[in-house]
Amino acid sequence: MLLEVKNLVVHYGAIEALHGVSFHVDQGEIVTLIGSNGAGKTSTLMSLARLPRPEAPTVSGGDILYNGESILATEPHELVQRKMLSLVPEGRHIFGNLTVAENLRLATYARKEETGEIQETMEMVYSLFPRLKERRKQRSESLSGGEQQMLAVGRALMTGSSFIMLDEPSMGLAPVLMYDMFRALRKINKTQHTTILVVEQNAKIALDFASRGYVLETGEIIAEGSSEELRNDERVKKAYLGG
Image (tube, rainbow, N blue to C red):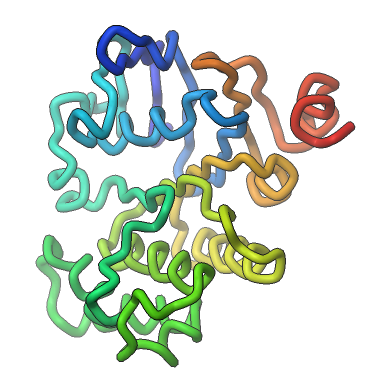
């Protein structure tokens, strides 16, 4: 078990956003958290990434284990330096005044490898997202929404992390770009053995992409299982799949 979340309780001030959430992700898996707006999906990822207040909530109960080790006292930069976890945040948060290549290089600040190894990672990113290579000298603010999302994913890969978390990667993307994005993520999983946890409001594409999933509602896990099991769950079909 690579990641284990145990009875996680988090607060924004006096407001409790997660009420004892538990789930796990195994090495090399693709797992999804689905749920509506306000369910606690982003709060979960922020807590896992150990982001500071006030952006992220305060963990007031439970534990987060990575390879059996609690990471509650671990700083966000340490997670990146140790190549444990990397977050692709909702809204991308790229540096618009920097070029594509500069955004990618910036993500390698904590890596200690030789320049050649970092260049290999960059070539891997460019092979996954050829548009980024074509636009590598462009300022990132000039990219389309889909291209910016590709850059956000590429930046996470440049950290060398073995576990990538994505918050609403399909948001604002045209269907063609959305499916291109998920195909690239699946390729990363298969070729790089990267573990992926994806938070999605689009339950259909999330369950097509992941092998397992959890359904989060108002800060609690209400259903879990294989993607097939969740697709056939009447609650999930009614609430998220239009059935």
